[in-house]
View 1 (cartoon, rainbow, N blue to C red):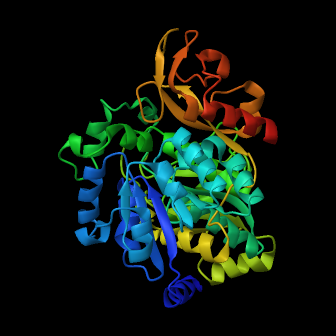
View 2 (cartoon, helix red, strand yellow):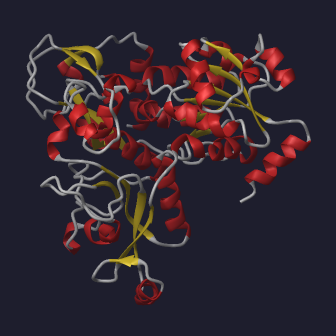
View 3 (tube, rainbow, N blue to C red):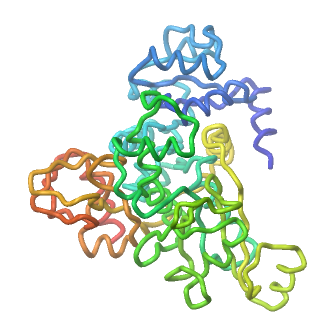
Length: 445
């Protein structure tokens, strides 16, 4: 609980933590609105392909125009201002940079930026959970070997869930399940950018589809983002996915310990020590009261009768047996909380969650029947969604990771719901992201 004090000391010593951000989208803008106000933080530079749009984003985030009135990184380093560029490579190489944040959402770009940051001696905060799900375990190993920090993004749900797990284990509890809430119905797996708008309108105050990225929002509903995020959790904690991936059972905050317990105890889980995402909708489409749509949770097991007695005495959210109990966080603030990761990496040399192994994968799964010659369009698109799968199963069956299921062509017909394999597609084996992923598979096989 000393990060703010440590940042204050850096400010007193005129040695602020200097940060570079790649990607000025929603997550990035939420970080920027707080970073400007955080003692001991200097945003040295921001890289985005559309500088004009970025300037508008900064104004909405409360930045005065004079903060970015500088002509170079060296000028920004001396003046405390922020240099804007369309070159991620130039930002990564800028003198004085301590921490790089990748908030692009592009797995191939995230791998490329992370490796460049490691070569240049920068700590990395990987907001880009798509890159982490595709190859995070090997990226974390590369950073560690270089004496650097590779970290999940505090404020985003995977890092918060990893903290729940760490809390439980530090207190001596067995972790039965950890995860988050979302809005889910089975037919959402077939949603596309053309059909998702009607569903979004049913619960979000949106009036104009042109104001949002429908492909990105679709990934939150079709099950893909949940699979990606729970894969990040598993790889950071050692939890193992359920045999058939996420089941998305409906559950309120107060039912977590009853629903997210093993089947042998009356719950829904195929194993203990796993992940699950609970739905805020019952299967008939009605809202679950007191749902956890924006929150995170952990279910723990008491190992002694006395611990179970304490669950009751201190009003833990226990199941009917008193054996299991839940702790939850009702919401998360994504980029507005990202400063915790930045400060932890720079000042403590400690990640706020990072891969420790390859335990989970996200497999490209067909949204519809497709023919040989059809092209896949990746996360949130028209053709595939991402299903969580134990990494051992994915490797044994040669499954195609979702992060590489973009702009690749099918070699044969596939059925709706089929989990795709490498043999189902034509892959460019000279692609850097493909080669790095294959290297990771060999390293963790």
